[in-house]
Amino acid sequence: MGTAAKDVIDVQQPNNLLLDKHVEYICAYENKKDDYEYVMTEYLRMSGIYWCITAMDLMGHLHKMTAEDIIKVVKKCQHECGGVSPSEGHDPHLLYTLSAVQILCTYDALDVVDVDGLVLYVSALQQEDGSFVGDMWGEVDTRFSFCALACLALLHRLDAVDVEKAIEFVLSCKNFDGGFGTKPGSESHAGQIYCCLGVLAITGRLHEVDADLLGWWLCERQLPSGGLNGRPEKLPDVCYSWWVLSSLAMIGKLHWIDRDKLVSFILASQDEETGGFADRPGDLVDPFHTLFGLAGQSLLGERKLKEINPVFCMPQEVINRLDVHVQLL
Image (cartoon, rainbow, N blue to C red):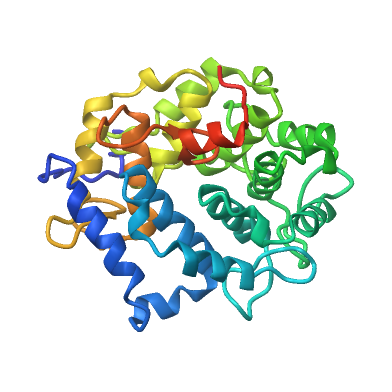
């Protein structure tokens, strides 16, 4: 007898997109700077800002965010080395450097930071095998390969690194199931697949992927509830509405999943009272899952939201303004 798949079985209301509530939630979150939750997330603040402004931009309400204050925060978090930290007093890291670049690109405010210094910081993190470490402490992960190339692509500075070596490393992380892991030999994971496909889309090498094999693995992430998980035997999570769907979009297989069931799962993960999305129905909401719930809905064609770019997780209109182009299958 087989083992039952881990899933959220009882997917209930709400069944419509509570756009106004989500706008209220993000606006309120920005003003709760003395709350325990806000204080305890200082270590990822830069990414938190990116999640919030991108969510608001997708909903057409970016103007309700305090742009001047946000840009000042980003400027204060750039270090002499060129990298950006999550908050003042923290170390710089590639993750938050990308978030900073995304924020400044959204506001068309790259001139407030030392772009040349930022490019030097990113390029110095590339290793001999083409991989990237996230910071001075030396952790290697395909997430960092994506962060590095996404930063440089948005800045039109891909020439600052060895792109071919970067591609070689990412391809060395490809597994027998078509997926990708954190490094060579690591288990396939939807988040890492997104990062590796992002690298290949940015560099025009998506043809190196077995789209049918990978598409099948990604589609198997959908559970009876309609939700998506990140790897076998895990519960569904709204954030994978982004990592899985964006990957499928990059390889031209978005139509391979059950759209209606996924939409129902995402909508059921909203909080009708406060606004915002949780990881799954009944859990507490947060800005991370709110962005990726909205981003997934955008990929699925929700007309109340702006079109999103599947590689950069930014509104397509911003990517068009930056004149950045990627390969999609």
